[in-house]
Amino acid sequence: MDGFIFLHRKILENPIAQNPTIAWLWITLLLLANHQNHKIIWNKEEITIKRGQLLTGRKQLSQQTGIPETTIERHLDYLAKNGHQIEQQKTNKFRIITILNWDTYQKRTPKRTTNGQQMDTYNKVNKVNNTTTTTQTGDTPPSQLAYLTNIPIQVKDELIARFILSEKELRDKAESLFLYCQSKGRVYKNYHAFLLNALKRDFKEREEPKKSWTLKPQNL
Image (cartoon, rainbow, N blue to C red):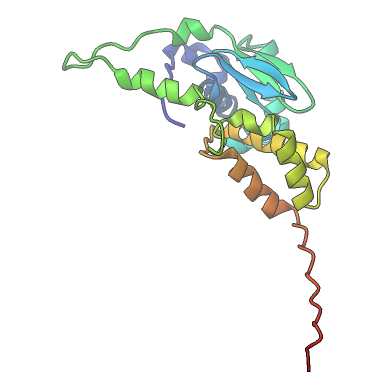
């Protein structure tokens, strides 16, 4: 994931500065938070992840930071209740974390460089980080992350017929890949191919029925 954030020196006045583990978690949350509103499809419903928010999970944050899951949960509760730095919306699949006062510290416009040119790279990087590619149609490979949470019915049927799995297993696998991409900031050109490779790795493909060959009687 490219780009950068503003890290205010006031963090040194915060008690979390005395705890390297929670400080690292806090910085990771700042780095993962959206720089602009971003819409996703979840269970056929449109959800907006706002500027200063991130969609993640305890397991994903543990993998991202190297901090144990139980410690992640405890530190998030501290940041929410005692530090008053975040708010959390939890479900049984994921959680949305809101960074409080995000705009207070992240709304500044970069100054001009020494040669008088504006830092266009700043805006370009943020646009790449938070905007999915445009919807593509026809035979063009699907390039939107939302594809994983809104797979066409015909494609579902084809995958279920090809692999030994149920519709629920397919949906759970696609949702887990969606959360992985969200938490890691991964972007793929073709999310159908990404899903297909994961299914090939984790599920067994059905064998093609063998053709029966019959010998035709020869004319003697």
